Amino acid sequence: MDQSIATEHAQQVASGERFEFGRNWSRFLAVLNDERIAEAQQSLQQMLGVSDLTGLKFLDVGSGSGLFSLAARRLGGRVHSFDYDPQSVACTAELRRRYFPQDEDWVVEPGSALDNVYLNRLGTFDIVYSWGVLHHTGAMWQALKNMTPLVASGGYLFIAIYNDQGKPSRRWKAVKKAYNRCPKPMRPLVLFPAFLALWWRRLLKDLLRAQPLRTWTRSSGRGMSPWWDVVDWVGGYPFEFARPEEIFDLYNQHGFALIRLKTQGGDLGCNEFVFRKMPGDLGK
Image 1: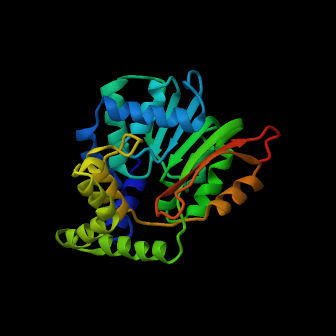
Image 2: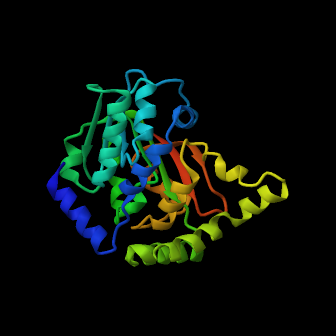
Image 3: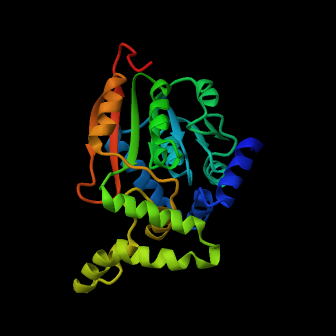
């Protein structure tokens, strides 16, 4: 583990400026199963419009639990995973140990989406994937720009960024900040009201349909766990957001064409984008 990254991360957590994503993901691994892994694989296939990733280089920027690195590797990709959070690196390394031990086609290491020295030595990839990560760096727009040279000419960039809902997004930012600055024994006082605000409509619908907790017991369609997603959502800080057109404009200026878009409409979740770096290498 890069000690400078680990030390900086620990200082940010201690000061209440960063959520421990990796601690959350380490608990998620206890509920990871083949069904969730298959869902993660399917979500990659659907958004990228491919059946497999055989022979393609796949960069997982902010690998978190490691689930999507694992999904990409199972689809045949040559995977490079990195994360700023030491426990997230450990989670990804654990999945590599479980499913692809001693695999030379899956690299796991610490790294930052804001560290240009580190990023410059990675080279380019056929697919750069960063789902729900770059808005947690503390410098989202710089992190978004830093992705452009990592994508090979003709390659794909698959990102998900929190939707800007105006005042509601700013209120949630205040909630997240309060959660991280609370003493740990007090955090449930922030978590449970936020959980009710996020889930009461869906739970009520299930109850009226005589199927209590049906939505809660299902995964998100990406193989994730509803409960650990809630903890991630409430705690996830730093926190930034953007309107879809802002993301489109940024990458259009760097020579990328939008291939697929999945928006949240009026919701607070993440908009998903798949861009292709057009031949001619305008992104560099």
